[in-house]
Image (tube, rainbow, N blue to C red; front, side, top):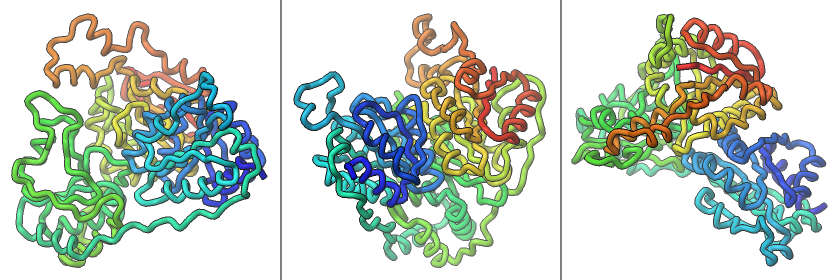
Length: 514
């Protein structure tokens, strides 16, 4: 058994049974091993940014790592933006990156690169296997790292000769660490903070915005009078009718400052203290008011559900008393489309147990209120800010949960970064309805041009902020990759096509012209 087969059998034995791939010459023995070994589903993508984003989406829904397979330094480099997003989202991934055979590296062939140097900024663990008999052991360690709470990125670099030479056979995965238990002192300190009267806020993320975490936090807030809020972006929020509703810190700095202006004490539960997305002239970077005391109940590495349960017991909160969102169906709008009307339509059509991937950027800033009372669903957001995450994450989520419908809400500018994801959706027959908001501009950058005080944009600046001339034809783009598409321009046709897409199996695309 060679090193590559030893590694594949180690991955499968360690519970890694999906591999998102874009291989090259140096990975051919690994490809052969994937072909030979049962138990691994191999999913080809036509660009490495789709590979890494899909692995991110898979973890978010399954909380078990997928593997990726990429070709040397340039291949890994193509996947970096979505590895950045995955790292910010605390997603566990096992990256396998091919390398030249060890005897060939000295000749500085065209694809020779510092792969470890490329990998380190987007990885928690990086290792190059030095000989074939260590490949399986290194792979087992990579699985353990990726699976460690809250989820980590492990990058294993595999020189060609370590794949084709004789290996060790499969190896067992080391013991995976458990989540850390929050100290009694931290729980008691949190209770004291909440007992000080008005002005307290629970700031949530991670498992704190999953159904059980929200129920516990909602009960604590109800008992103590504290406010409840989620950080601006979250890897997965479980929301909808019957669940505790939670709003997020707004993206625009003035709105965020207004929402947080009365907070005197903030208790972090898996969240970070709120800061502005960017630094702006004459605006603060820190969004909490001066004098606000910030304390941490639990980090993302901790067992925050246990911490919330102990805090609820300490303050006498009953989870059954937590106020939950009631079912709400907005009035169905008609006529010309705008963001508020789109939000109302989504509030009518989101099906139960849907997975909503939100990369709506500017169009979707108001989607939250009118979708709060839809049937229970999951809402996934971009944690790292690098656009082009949405459609690849939809691929991974659909593979992780094949019995659930995925609704991907994507800006047209963002979608062009990883448009190749449509091809993978078609090849795999994934249940993804992709909605493209075709405003034909980088609308967010127009707002940011003003926010940073850059003045009034002239013709050259406008040409860098618009994506028309020519207009993108998303229906044709989708058809070229095997995904049926339709263009809509009004509320009635959008509602009709959304219902159709969400009812049928397989992928489809709706281009919404704004």
